[in-house]
Image (cartoon, rainbow, N blue to C red; front, side, top):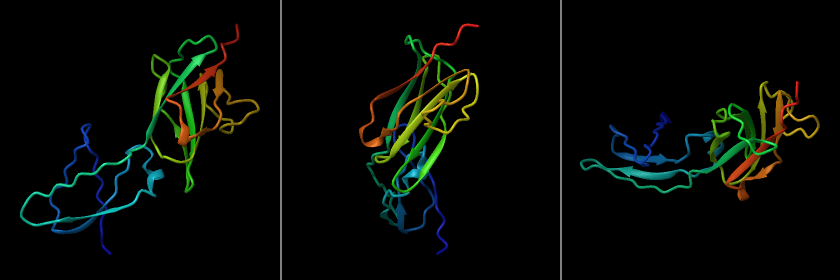
Length: 170
């Protein structure tokens, strides 16, 4: 139909501005910037842009849950610089990838989680994760590695802790 999608990111305050639209009907869909490919099932809303006056459209949306991931040692010490891999599956599709490395507190965050599905997390320090994600035998390879069980997105905890074994003495 010759329609060209326009993507606009809102500011931290949730405000957005789209200029130069001709009067007419448009369809709008709100999705979080992170993991937006998993939000294709979010319904479109129709709005009408009228000529003459500024048009204002206010939307509210559940933009997805966020999950703090904490990578720690057996004794509870934070593990900065750990690599965290995820696999996320929803009723419609799946996606996998890596989170930002853990910060000095051993934390990283996964944003924009959809309301339904399952999540598996693995973490490693010192070498890439190359075993199958969520494998129960021989967790991911790395200098130190740990994994977490499958999480249900409908009942996520506020924080997931992944415990890495203390390094073996050399």
